[in-house]
Length: 271
Length: 271
Image 1 (cartoon, rainbow over the protein chains, first blue to last red):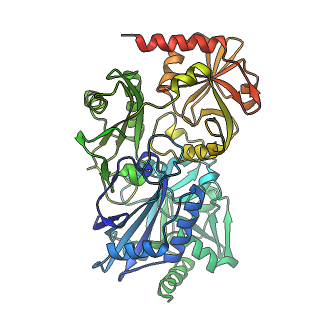
Image 2 (cartoon, one colour):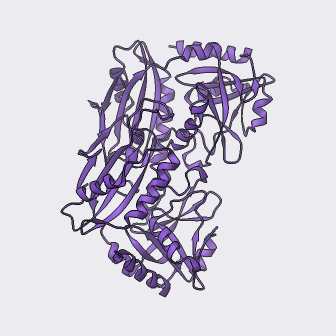
Image 3 (cartoon, each protein chain N blue to C red):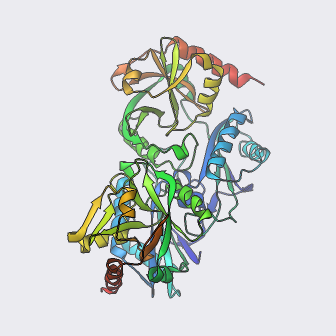
C-alpha cells in the first residue's frame, strides 16, 4: 500500500467495529490512475452508486472521492486506487443502525506487474472447481463479500500465473475470478448474463454499450467457450487480455480481440 | 463495545489492508460470558476450527483465545464476547499470500436486553423476502460474508422486535436471521438440513447430539412450519426461544420447547 486515507485523514487503520470488517457490509472499486487521472471514472462511480443503492448505503459526494483518489495517487506515474465504502461503525447485530455513517477508505497500490505483457501476449486459464452461488439480491455489484473469489484464487495456487474461470452452481460460466469474460463466435461477442451472480465489470459495461449491435448476454455453457473462435478477459485495470488457453483447448490471439484492444485504447484517450 | 484486544493488545482498530475488511476473509464466534466464564466454549472452538479448516486459515491456540475472552470480559457479571479471526494483512488480490498471519480481534459487548424475557414469553417472527444462496463450499461455517443477513435484517425494520425466518433460493426454510430453527411435530424435532447454506449453530449441534433419537435434519417447506405443533429458535447467546407467531399463524409456548429450555439450563450447569 503506497498511501491511504480513512474518511479523508491519513491513516492505515479502520475501527474494529466497522461493519465492513464485521459483515463485509460495503462496496468497493479498483481504478487505474495514470498520470494522476483516474481512468473510466464515471463508469466506476455509476457502479458504486448502484452498489450503494442495493445495500441502502448513503454515498459520499463523488467530488470527495475524486479528490481523495487523486491525493493518494500523487507522485505516482501510474498506480491502482482502491475505494472502499462501508456502513461504518456500529454495535453487534446484523440490522444496520440508523445512526451509522458511511466509512471511506481510499488507498493507492503499486501498478501490477505484467499487465502490458498479458495484453500483448495473452494469458492462460483453467476452470475452477468452486461454483458461484446464485444470489440475485446482490447481482452485479462489487460488494465486500468475496470469500467465493478467495476460495477460487486458492485453487489457482497449483496453477501459477494462470487465470481461473468460474461457473455458477448450475454449471453456467460466469467469468474469471477477477475479470469478465467474452467469447467471439462467428464475429459475434457473447458474454455471460450476470443476472444471478457475478460483477458488472466497468469495462464490460462500456464494451456492451459501444458494441451493442454485435453483443449478446447469454447463459453460457462451458462447451460454448471451447467452441469459440476467440476468448478474452476484460477488466478496468488490466484492459482486454486474449486467452491463449482454457484447460486443454488453445487459441492464438484473434482479430476481434485485437480490434477491441484498439477500441479500449481509444476509449482511454477520449477527453 | 466494552473492551477490545487486537492480536492481544488493547486497541479498537484493525489494519485497513486486513483481508477481513477487504473480502470478509475470516470467521467469527459470538459467546455468552457469565460470571467470567465463556459458555459452551468447546462447541464454539469446534466450529471455529471447522471454519478455519474450510478457509485454510491458521488457527491460534485455543488457550490464547480463552485468555483474551476472559480478559475483555473482566469486571462484567455477564456480557457477549465476539472472537474474529481473519487471514491478516496483505496487498490487493484475492489469492491469499503465503506470508499472511491470522489476525485476532476479541471484544466484549453489553448483554443484549430482553433475552430472558424472550425465553419466558416467546418471540414473534415474519418470513423474509430475501432468499439465501446455495453455496456448499461455505456450508455451516460462521464466516464474515454476511451481507445476506444484513439485507434480511433491513427488511425487519418495518417489523420492530420481530425475528426473520429465511428460506433458500429453492424455497426451503433455513432458519432465522441470527438463530437456528426447530419445529416440533408429533413429538419429533425437525430442523432444516444445512448442507448448502446456513450456519451450524453451537446450541443446535448440542441439541442434536443430546436428543438424536427424536431429531431429524430435513428439507423443510414453509408449510411444514405452519403445520408444526411448536416452533422455537435456538442460539448460543439467546438460548431456546418459543415462537409465538410466524406471519399469520400463532402458537402458545409448547411443552417440548419448555422441556428443552430445562435441558439447556442443565447443559449450562454441567461442569
